[in-house]
Image (tube, rainbow, N blue to C red; front, side, top):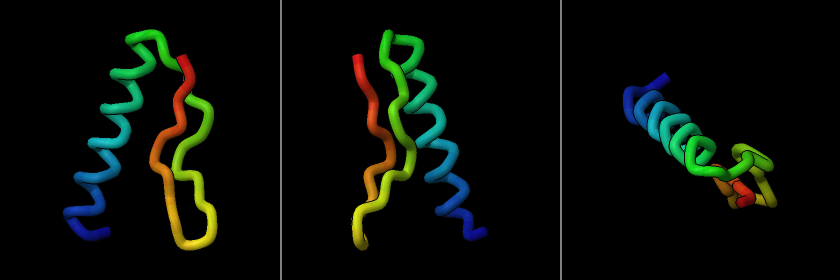
Length: 44
């Protein structure tokens, strides 16, 4: 895996943990629709 991909995965995980600690709930990670992707779908 390329270094920028590793950094991106770590950053995404840190963002997810931050949001969870601040009252959000993770609905979906890496949701794909066609060629598009949403990294995190969160709900408060």
